[in-house]
Length: 266
Image 1 (cartoon, rainbow, N blue to C red):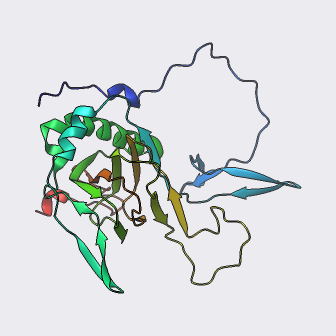
Image 2: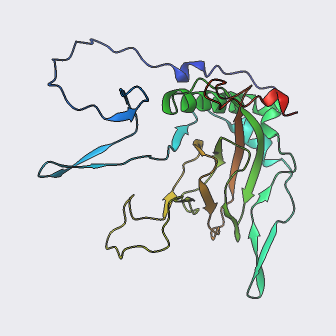
């Protein structure tokens, strides 16, 4: 199969504002953000503030970044190739009652994004990884895809709770999914053993979060964020493509004693 290359580089570029005007001066305010060693405060992205009345403010400190990206073009050829990929015949889990839990079937190939048939999908994912690292994490490191594999989930199959070791940012792309299928489920890393009785769940008192995904969407998240997929009770098959990533080259800083010379670890 011949696939014409698609340039996704423009996905990381910000549109130029039209008719931009200098905003009126604002009264000085206490700056919110990250306090640096020299005492100055660095403006911080991702710290939403909710006004609670009577001058009270609610901050959401240390939020977990989860990024969702729609695939912008048709991928029918890639989907046909994915459907024909071989997977493990059965992935049996623990015994429950008179039967076993059946986990989703993973592809025998754990480097599927290295295949030329998925070159466009890889280019799209790499562009979004770059955006995640530079615009959300404000890092100059480059993440490279390490492993990538397919998951096929038919009726009666699920995926147990897990994290992705030896990875910095992981992701899942959904070439085939139906609204009747159970969504991916994330579990908080800060879950308490004892919790208050609640009448309404929100981001502060919930241990889990269900995130329905649409066909063609990509989701990126920290690799140590626990996630799972509930049992598929529908007749529709879910097909997803998962992957891990790791910074390219050496990491850290010599002067701050955080240097990690990866070229010495081989």
